Image (cartoon, rainbow, N blue to C red; front, side, top):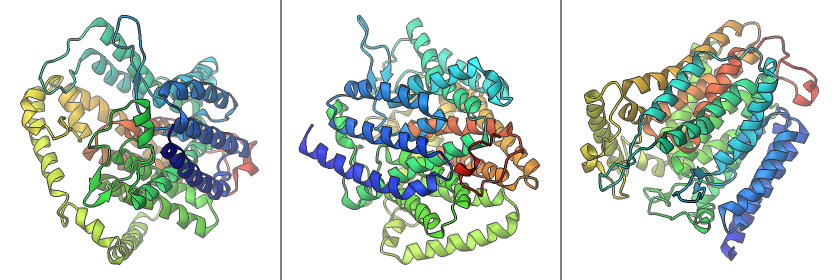
Length: 515
């Protein structure tokens, strides 16, 4: 622990304390006071531990019992999971095992899977009737089919020397276990345990709270050109590189605890998508405007163009999926144009224009690289259409960047390259089926329960924005986790009943009501 660690910790805790204080009146409209206080306590304690701990394993020694304790007490484990998802950066460390290089990497995501998701799934298995009718279905089949391809088709890592690492039965078993832990368990737990609207809205509100904290930290990082969480990874033994401090033009790209600026931008765009619904339950116009401004401030601080477009897409999708779509989209367009003009004439307008692909000069290199990557990648996919090419790196060597990697930033291309059109079909069918089910359910209840339909519109907005953002983003970190969280919420939403009151009153007034 160093003086700078303490200084960073004080800054992070101060920012978080301010956000928790001002967010509490909003949060208590969607969650109980006990859950809010407990989640805040765990977040603050684990943040403090992460900054003073000399290793990840000491952090894990404190985090595991705290996660288990909070999970047993919390009325909605998925909400707890979403708040703790990025309480620390997602750095992974190999579990040592005698006679081997390591069992597998352990990070905060997997700690949460073991301590929150797995117990929640096990409780469901003991009482499956609580799932509200969500059973094994087409979504599960498509996701497990994707997992089967990942397990069966070994993709050799991108190594500059072009030597493919050999596969083994142990590696096959490891891939199967990690797919269950990282992917299927997350979807299963969300889709089966968020069986009421109260829990779904609680989860969305808690994720917005986490997004607000990261947004405030991101704004500070950008204004002070000071990444607050980087030293944690350095002290824990993660080697830092030139890509740790990403810039766009002369601006440092904030990342908070998300692990990357793109991941931060994605998370904030999804948080904004949820906020489009949640703000209707907040009577204070000042608070509604303040949260919106905070989330967009964090988005600008990340300087990630894809998430900017994703957040705008979420906004227009939300209003288009609701009632009076034509008039609302027209009004929204004029509002967005007005906001854009205000930004352009503001002090940050020149900086925004400078990094836009069409008007700026700093974006040319990345845009050209992505075009070349897409062209070469799809050529390889067409040559191996069914199950892809698990070792395409020699054919793409001229696209290796200065960081020593071939950066496949298009998630659809990544899936098709490694698993062919078969894998891409399973991947897209899974999330598009979730989207279709939410849309159908929203149309059915639009007149009888407009509030529940509005939450469905928010889910649609988040999913559509995600589909757009992962086109220009790697499928990694928080974007990967939220992809399956959204699919799980969509599955649960499609099974909800209508016999619930409107969300216009605080949750404390509806504690005894079940969906």
